[in-house]
Structures are given as structure tokens and as C-alpha cells.
Amino acid sequence: MAKNVPLKIVTYNIHKGFSFGKSRFVLHQMRELLNHLDADIIFLQEIQGKHEQHELRISGWPTEPQFEFLASKIWPHYTYGKNAIYRKGHHGNAILSKYPFCFCENIDVSIQKRASRSLLHGIITLPNKDILHVICVHLGLMKFEREKQINILVERISSHIPANEPLVIAGDFNDWRYNSTNQLEFNLGLEEIFKTLRGSYAKSFPSWQPTLSVDRIYYRGVKPELCKRFNQYPWKSLSDHLPLYAEFSF
Image (cartoon, rainbow, N blue to C red; front, top):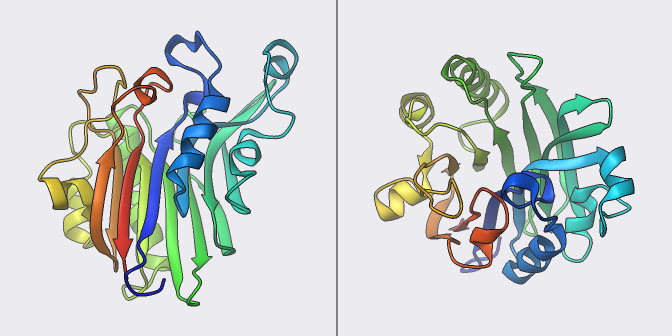
């Protein structure tokens, strides 16, 4: 990136485009709000790639996969990784980017068949030809799952990402007890932007009364400039998670 031009990041668990309890389909409103943020890179979790039943029954369901629908106006580059496949369709993680990917891979970290999970690793070529590693994360609900998944994430970073190459990891860690802190922050030298700039992780779940810090934005090799949690309306009436926003400089 050019000097003094921040790299703008958003992470958001979109709950497959539904409000809490699936009472309303709100993907169109999510797209409008995300477009307004105009981030450079968006990390998305629980994004629906396909659902045959919803395609027929839900008014306004897009004809293309949700990640293409959200990306259509601003983010010409995107990658999607399935982490849950079932008879009617599949959902997973996605990364939307204004800048092209030169590499992407979805890493299966599922410990249980009923709770499929994955890490989506991409390398983005920035306008100044620098590269940025990005990993979109959605970890399991059970502690023993997360411990094994964090070990896989640590191994992936250690073996595939040189220490001198910038890295941003964002997503839903489901780690409200902070069990992953030692592995990620102390062993790998990662920092979390809300903890760095505000002294504590952002509380992002549940969206209507956030009490748990499950969504994170970790980084290495970039400078944190700004972070925000969007906890006002209409954000808090959409997904069951709140989106987190960050700005970095190089």
C-alpha cells in the first residue's frame, strides 16, 4: 500500500444472511452496509455457498452464491472455502478483496463430522506489489476442538508464512475464555488489534447484548492504526455477531 493509505479490514460472521433465530433474511441489508464501509478486504464466516431449499422458498434469495452477491459491486476478487457440506448445500468461509489473489487454499480442520470447520488461507498482491497473507478462521465450539485447530493454525503459519511477510488473521475464534492467547500471541508473535489499541478484545456476541469476545483480528508485520466495533443499529439487529473493523499501515 502507498504511504499514509490505510489497509481497511472487516471481519463478520453473517449467520448465513439471517437475523437471530432466522426470523428475517437480511443479506441485502448486510450488503448495503458493507458496501458503505468500503473495506479493502472482508473476512466472512458462515456464508452460504448453496442451499437448494432456501433458493426456492425465501424471497430475495440471490441467484449466485452469497459471497458473489456480497462482492458484486466493490470486491472483484474473492475466494470461498466450504467447511460444512450437507444434502441441501454447503456453507463456509470467504474472503472478499479489492486486490487479486496469487494463492488460496482451504485447510480442513474438522475434528467432528457434525461440526465441520476450516481455515481459508490466501495471499493477496497489493497495489505496490507487496504481498499480504490473509487467513479467515472459524473454529469449533468445544475447547478440545479449538485446541487441535489452533495447533493446525500455528503449524500452518510456521511452515507456510515467513516471519518477514505481513499477515492478518481474522474471524470467529469461539474463544471466549482466551485459551488461544499463548499459542498465537506469545509463540507466533501475533497481536490482536483491539487488545493493542483498546486494552481488551472486542465483545461481539451476541449482537443485541454483546458479552463474549469471540471475533478477533490478529496481525503481524503491519502497523495498527484504528479499530471499531459496530454495535449500533442496524448492525445489532442483523447477524447474531457484530462486525469488527480495523485499519493498518505498512
